[in-house]
Image (cartoon, rainbow, N blue to C red; front, side, top):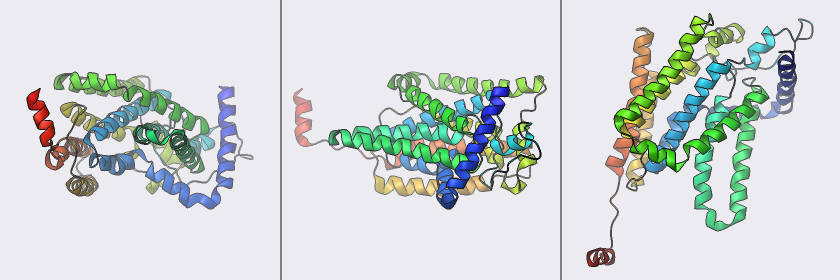
Length: 351
């Protein structure tokens, strides 16, 4: 434990160094951490893909949902502190030499710190996107492939810097998030896995989602039985956040699990889409943008004054409905038939 405490102590100095070096670029780093927030990715960037390609959206959705679920489970198991409260709780510093790190509204997240959800989810999301781009630009030679990989790792670097700058994560939590993200990307992008899940019956896919829910619930109640408060991170965030209004319930592990489960159930009902009609983007893009706006409005107006059960049930239902809509309604209403030329018809007849 002494070695672990020493490591975190050195990483606090790293955060202070990052805050000093990048203080002139705070607006840029704030934009980076906001854009690559898992919730923002899930409600804005990923749905836009649904307006471009249903198969790509399905692949991206499967990868991101499983990665986020893994992140939630690992966070609950490791139960690591975040820098902004560890610094104030640890005995590695005395009252005389305890440094102070900068924090603002982006700092105060009420969930365990390891692995970084921003890095883990973004690694998977960008891995899928850059894999598609690399395949598309494959004919342009080695230079395009190298450029895409530089862009990929540069983006992960700046996300890591932004998370350290705002005191959200230690360096090792960022690195671990990237490693797990790459592992999950490799697993989720396996065509065999996608094909296997698609072949399963709807009941079996739903049973798998229920199994994941039971894992999360068992972790929650195991901590309770061991005398550990599963909401300890929320209390630590409230204790050491300079302004309690910075804290948002949507960043807690319980709400994350609920959001993911609602969307996973929708994916389980529909199943991974391996082949789909090309979309008429003049219809699909406006449709998706309208649905995105409606989803934001609906989530902002979820009833909060009727108890936790009503709030969670309403949120779960909304995430289920909108994910189902992106998977089913968009291709159904904006899918265009593939026109076959006369020569192709004649060939098929002759065969």
